Image (cartoon, rainbow, N blue to C red; front, side, top):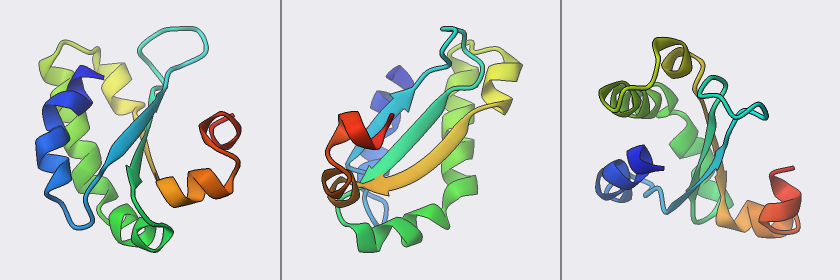
Length: 98
């Protein structure tokens, strides 16, 4: 979460802006296999955001590495994309992310 919070001002200035996130940890609680969903506002923005995957993933991997995450955790990071609009259409966060 600290990595996202640190990057939030940068992410908010992107086109489209990243307005929120959902972090899904590994079920075992370890640092490997972490997933971060980056959220834009509208469903029509998701494809534009997702083409920036490599650049955005690099931002997070660098932030994780600088905060002492193990190399395996950084390499296994998954970055996914959706919108507030899609989450609401999917029944809200509880239903969308399970």
